[in-house]
Image: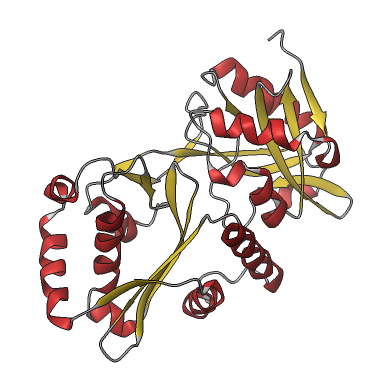
Length: 303
């Protein structure tokens, strides 16, 4: 590869050129914008090819004197972004260069890095360009049944700006499953939501019953290309009322006939994947990348 790939520290990145590359890339996604990385990563620098023709954020931490790449909380994909197709040689060049500066990595490449031969992770997306009446024709039979059942509960769908409540409910519901997440991670998520709200990218929808109880919440970001379901949470009563089915169906109704994709953000858990497939979504996989060049005996600990 004749192009020059150079390591650039965060303070030296031309943020306007960076965001312009993400904005104009076919695989450009919200997780790679400067504001998102600044909010969610402990530290980040970058690999940049020529004059921002192709770029790769490097989200890093340091422990026991070893600097390594990691995937930040609520940042589903990273990897290489380019306005031109990301070929196998470009992927190989960027990943090889990253090994020059880091001894260990566990990160996610994005869906546009499909030339990478690695572990595929599921991510389901749904085009919202068609009218609702056409989209719902692809709904699976059990989803239609659950939506019909939800009607008898007189559920109410509405918007709210309260990201603190959404994050708090999510944390309480999934604290046992997400034991590795720290208070600092949730503080970063709140900072992200505050910044996204200021940029008019934040989109939160709730489902309540006629007693004004919150049954389901979806916290999303809308970058003009996709609606990303960053987190969702359904109460026990909400599950009985099919509140999450109702919420997503109404989100689709709200944004039908737009140039947006609904990005469900996963999942490799069979039950959740089945739930997303029920809406007629398609899988757009991304990729897990790992290398371990740690010195012995640390290499053995991270096998």
